[in-house]
Length: 241
Image (cartoon, rainbow, N blue to C red):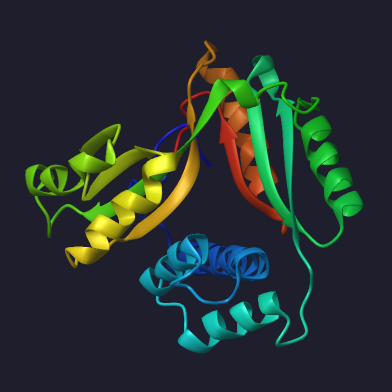
C-alpha cells in the first residue's frame, strides 16, 4: 500500500513473508509479460523491461521464470494477454484511492474492485477524479549500509532528481518520470546495486482525516491489494504499516 514509503523494512512471520513474496512474483511476471509485448523482449532495447528484470533479479526470481514471462509477452510461448486498467475512487472520509491493475478480464476486475469499494465504505469515481492528487515518479532504492547518501547524490545529480533520503536501511531516490531511465542507467554504469527501481504515485494533495478513518482506509486498501489483478494501490493519506 502506498501513501507512505513502501520501502520501510517490516518484520513478518515467515508464512506472511512467503505469501507476500508469492504475490509480488505474480505481479512482476504479469508486468514483464506486458512490457515485453509492448516494447519487445530485449531488455537492452526496452527500458521498462530492463527495469522489471532488475527488480525480479533483486527478489531472487529464478532466471527461467523471467525468461518464460518474456517469451509469453512476445508470443514465443502461449500465454494470457494482460492489459493495464486504472481505477479511481474514494474511501472513507473522502480519501482518494488510485488502483492499478493488470487483467485478462476487465469486466471481472471492475466488478471485484467495485465490490471491495462498496463493502468497505468507499465508491468508485470517474477517470481523472482523483489522479490529479498524485504524481507519478521514479523511485530507486539502494542499500544504505553499502552506499553513502553524498556519493550517490553526486552520481545522479545530472538526472535532476527530486530527492534522496535515508529511510531506515534504505537510500530512496525520487526522480521525475522523464529522468527515471537516465538516473537508473547512471547507477548501472557505476556498478551500483539497486534493491529496486520502479515507478509509483506520490501524494501531492494529502487528505486531513482522523485516525479512525485512516484505519478504515487501510482496511479498504488491504482488501484491494488482495485481489489477484491488483498491482498497486495508492491513498492520499499516510497509512500504517
